[in-house]
Structure formats: structure tokens, C-alpha cells
Length: 394
Ligand code: NAD
Ligand code: MG
Image 1 (cartoon, rainbow, N blue to C red):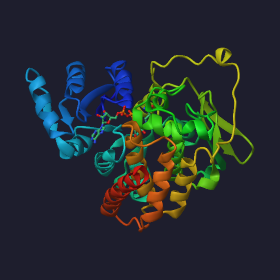
Image 2: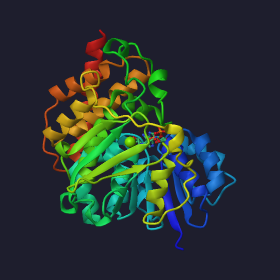
Image 3: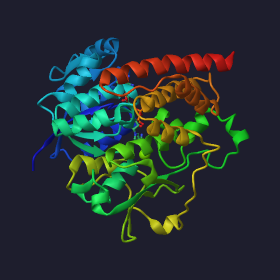
Image 4: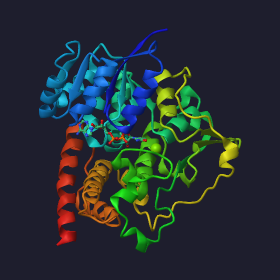
């Protein structure tokens, strides 16, 4: 068996820790080349002591100094700091698999470095693909990188497709993708009740334990909006061929409909270690540590249509994809700023879509010709979203 050498970008996060839990179960299959984190050096130091990576990177240079001191007795682990360090461990020849699990736009450059170096890229960082869409997929094709979806829905869709037709669903006789959504913790809240929900309530997801940002996205349905865009790029399709099904049990992770009426689904316990193990070992299958599915205990499945009036973020995402060019990058940036403001208590939950819609309305759509345009738009949209928040709260 060939041992795969892995860099885990965002090792201290929810996906990063789940990845390391799968890796821990298969010491003969995987070796950890690098672990990275943002600011919390103590947490990364603990992981370094267990996994003994060749390189550890803190995105924050000051945190890198702290990590160096913490790991002074571990000379085999080289400590780097900053974006350059992240990009280096994503692209170095010593690595063949990169888990892209940094949250938000901050993950785009390192993920792109891995893509351009032709790695197997396990994509959890959906924001990177949403922001740069076609440019990202063109870079994958150009470098011959192997892009495997880790988002549970996209991993499910991937598993329900013939492996050689992932970019040609029509050619495989696929008529529709049924993208499932849990509906989030506020699925049954009235519009009025949504105004007063707190960050703690938004982060308490009924089925999944996740980082704060994606938990809020899941509560606003922006997560499904980002995933709709992600599905269109990954599977080379259009929003008209992707139908969101709210399925509160989160057991069916998505489905693919074929011309003959067959609908293939992937099911499993809501545990990210399953799609992570699928990506790490693909095309083989390995133990993920996830509990076996007990359908008798679950009993029933339910399905409903998403409510775009109470949850406008899904509509905004579909519109941004249709607008094309830099619009999805603006959507993503405005969402990141609005979610951060909600989490720090300076924006109410129902105003998250308001800020995004206003930012989209006043930021010109430009052709997404190159990554510099994307990064510039991201910056412009963030400034604009902050301004909109200021206008709302005066
Ligand atoms: P998280 O907040 O738990 O972890 C984020 C990780 O990114 C941490 O290791 C953090 O140190 C690092 N990070 C944060 N800001 C950074 C920066 N500026 N530069 C470098 N590193 C930085 O997030 P998560 O829930 O693990 O999500 C990670 C990604 O995976 C997101 O894009 C999310 O949408 C996606 N995803 C997560 C889940 C899930 O179940 N958690 C499911 C599907 C997709
Ligand atoms: Mg998902």
C-alpha cells in the first residue's frame, strides 16, 4: 500500500480535526506532512505532538513565533508563518493530498496553490470555489489536479455518479441533482422570531457539529446557496438542474436522478468523517469511525421545499450565480462580513440577507478574467458590506 502524505489546511477546525481522526485510524495509509492553523498556536502544538508533521504553519506570523517556542523540543517540525507558508505546504513536492479546510475566502490562495501543483485536493473550503468558479475549475483542468468534494452533499452526489462523468452529467443520463438541506435550527421559526435569534442558538445545529461560520450559514440557508453554486461548478451544471430538498433528518446527503427515472442516493449518519474518509482513500473504502446507520431508530424521512421568503439567502446565491462574473465573490464577501457582525452582536440575524442584497446591488459586476479581479472584488465588497452595516445601525 502506498502511504499518502497529507497537508491539512485548517487542522484545528471542525473538518481538520475530523480529518485527523480518520488519519489516526490508518497510520499505515497516511502520513501527515503539514498542519496549519490561524491564530491558536497552543491547539496546533498539541496536534503537532501527536502527528509529528514535517512543517507546522500559523497564518498569523506572531502566532508562528509562539508555536516555535512551544515546539522548541520538537526539532523535526519546522514552523512557518503567514500566507506564504500555507501556500508552500499546499504545493510542495513532498505532499500528494491536501485537505482544504480553511474557512472562508482566506482559503482561496492556499487551495489554489494545491490545485496548481496538481495535488489531490479534498475540497471542504466551498467559499474558494464559489468566489472564483470557472477560474478555479480551469486551474484544476490545466494542472491535472484531482478535485474531490468533501462537503457531504457534493460527496454524496459524486458517489452517485459514474466516476468518469462527474463533469458531464447529461452524458451520464443524469436529469437532475436533488441537493438536500437540513433546514437549519430555525426551519420552523416565523419571520418575526428570526429577528431575535442569538448567535448561540444559530450555532446549535440540530444534526451537525460544525465551525461557527458554516453553522450560521446553515441557519440562514446561505450554506445551501453556496452549495448550489458549488454543485454547478463541480458537476458542470446549472441551478435549473439542481433542486434543493429540505430533509430535516440529514440522513440522505443528496440524490441524483437519471433519465430512466432511477434516483440514486447516498445515506449515512450525519458525520463528516464519512465524506472525508471517502476523499482520503478514494477509490478505496476505509473505516471512518462513523457510527453505523440505524434506520429503525430514525423511522421516517421528511421532505419539504425551502422557504425563500423567510430565508432569502438561497435566492440571493442563485441570482449571484446567474449574474456571473464577480457577483458570487461579492455574495461570499458580504456574507462573511455580515455573519461576523452577527456573531459579534452588531447585526441582527434577519439583517444578514439585507446586507448581502444591498452589497450586491451597489457593487458592479465585472468579468472574472483572472484571480486578481476576484481578490480586488472581495476587498471592495467587504468594505461595502461594512458600510451597509454602519448605515443600518445608525
Ligand atoms: P472551523 O471554523 O471549525 O475551522 C476553520 C479552520 O481554518 C481552523 O483551523 C482555523 O485555524 C483556520 N483558519 C481560520 N481563518 C484562517 C485564516 N485567515 N487563515 C488561515 N487559516 C484560517 O471551520 P469548519 O467548520 O471546519 O469549516 C472549514 C471549511 O469546511 C469551511 O469552508 C466550511 O464551509 C467547510 N465545511 C465544513 C463542514 C463542517 O461540518 N464543519 C461541512 C462541510 C463543509
Ligand atoms: Mg454541506
